[in-house]
Image (tube, rainbow, N blue to C red; front, side):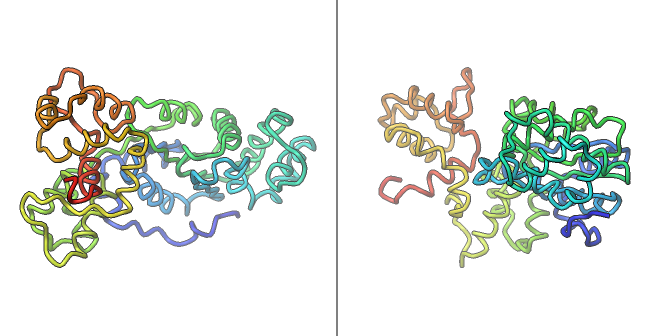
Length: 352
């Protein structure tokens, strides 16, 4: 029996992992219980990884073999790294059951010995991954848990997708999560096509104000005033990670913010939401700062504040995903409330 160490402990799903996710969690649970696969998707910080871990803890105990990988952006250039995470611990178990050419190609890719590549050993590698998963499935259920699919190295992503599309009728299930910015995003479509037939796609959306309050309470921030919780929900846009980081920053302050005062935005969140600002021109960034200082900024208001090229500068920001694109709307709307809050918090006092 091959089970990764992090899935050997009994399931202990914390309540905050499924706050506001009860229905989708139940749907994903039913899908896994029926032998199907699940793809969780949504924007950064929305809770994909926490829901994935909760489901994996629950179903990891029922599978004979659990294979897991969690990709990172900094390692996405390393070929076969995710595949090594998935199959490295079971290589000795499956190798004897593979045809010689497949075994040689797979061992070369996973160990780094030799010069295996998709270009040179494409068919042998694809068939080797498929054969390895089928060999494991012949001994009992297999659960493949893959987080942050968007950062999988291209070679591993290609091999896993090839196998996944051909696993119908075998007890191999995929439980995956991928970052997407919209229901119709290209990343979502690409990852869904690489999953087994009949995979249930579950999009995680924002939490309501009540759910954010429950989440903050579970994390020890239940003493925050209602008005502050309301502002946390507005600024975070219902994103649980953003809400928790804002709650933590407020808990570290000796006094709550005054009415109308912007919330303190932690450095970690500023870096997350403002990384694209460096791609803006100085003038466009200035225009966005003016917009962030207004409750309901409009092009007319920006012009009145001296931003003569507001339309062009807002269009530049919209192309980078910083502003929502609503041609018929009179207001200038940030793509996420936290972008406005972080931009304002980042600016020196004299610029504000």
